[in-house]
Amino acid sequence: MPKLSEYVKTAEAAEILGVAQNTLRKWAERGDVPMHRNPANGYRLFKRSDLERFLQQIDKPVDRKKK
Image 1 (cartoon, rainbow, N blue to C red):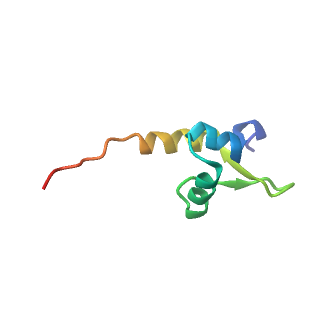
Image 2: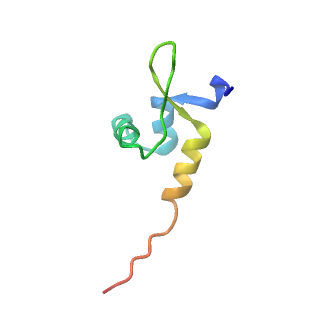
Image 3: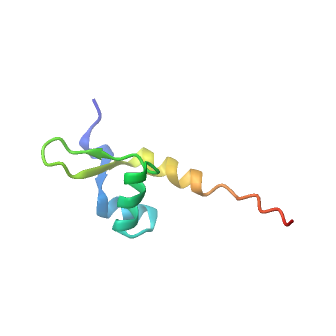
């Protein structure tokens, strides 16, 4: 079972990703960033390893060939 310390709330996750909280919420709703819910209070939780994986994915160079 995962430990709660592996997760961060929306504000900290947004800071890690360098985006606004509303942007992170939209990404989570679209499924771009995996999100979990705290079973006790329903707060959004983001696993640190998921955030790191997301950052690695968006850090890949884009192939922009001129036409």
